[in-house]
Image (tube, rainbow, N blue to C red; front, side):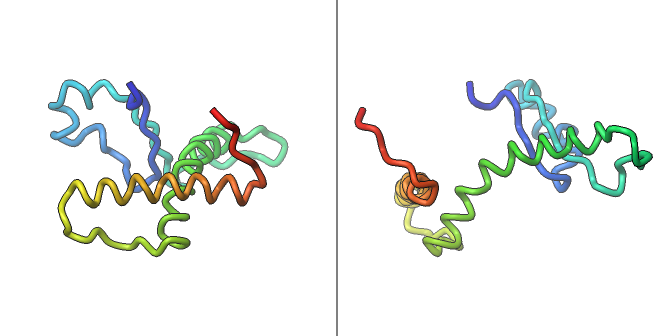
Length: 116
């Protein structure tokens, strides 16, 4: 399915060691690609290729693509907190907002929708 790999920032270190993840058959098979803290990365000389930082940068670029839609929903549409109107209403509201966020991102990028 979709959740074979999970990307996270350094705040999620050790998530694969948590009991609720370890004990669940589905979650324990997920590959967690969590960024390291910047202070733990080794220093390299000026002429060396810094592979460690390059790998961390690639992880962040994948995560950034997902987080951009959340920024649009929070900043452009003003969605800050969940209103307790019922789980279905909240879910439908978020689906609509993510659809609008995708359309907004297309408009900003200058792309047009292709007819299906």
